[in-house]
Image (tube, rainbow, N blue to C red):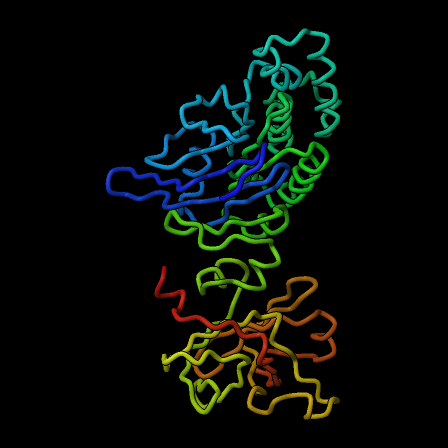
Length: 365
């Protein structure tokens, strides 16, 4: 594993709590100024891995390397990493200015330079007019901005965030996502962000590391994670997928009475095949187009069971061969269709939009 200066390297990291394996065989190189999200369900090991990086938790084996130096035995205060937790952990008896200045005071920075630096930070996080207020006078979103400002004030080499937005309501989370992304780009700081919110991870990260049972199961750009999920678990956890269990027959996949054409159907000896297709990749059949535009085997007529209006899209639940499935169509297409519950309509399953797996995610959970 080649490394360069200012990289953060996790080399064969393992962590056990008694018989419980919390982190297993994690190898990861994080480039300078890269934004990486650890994403996974509760108990997958993402926070434990973050705590190992910060030094609050000691790994059972493996090395944490920064700037070509092994820092396993370096205490958290000496790692010069900034940390933002889910709980804001602000000092209630200090003003916003004093909270942000705290780390700088601990480093014996001259008062004049502290004031200048705090002023810069408050401008960055949009709290210039709140510097004399106390935490109790601030909203949750404002308190989290103060915590973020305090962490970046010391100009950390790496900034680590442990589900910092999970306690906030949806609209504030979206606004603060923008603040965090802008700060990371402007400051050029390496950032590691832990979350169980897949939308948050996809919106923020340069790369997303999907974790499960203490292991990194896939790492890649948000596009790669969403468009090319390596396992059925990832296909389900990131976004939404419909799953089909079928049998190979004459180069197609038999699913109930249907025989679906699937691009690049694997030629392994396994007779059973598991397919996944995302709701937005199923198409409405356009009756004005020639039937030559569609493979007849992949056109099905279904009835709308549940219709959910979600703004720009409408999500329709339908039953196909006794399986409940979802299709997303645009609000404009839905309006033209004038669809009501129990109305029938035709869908097309493009052969090249299926993902194939050797196991079904429901067996993995």
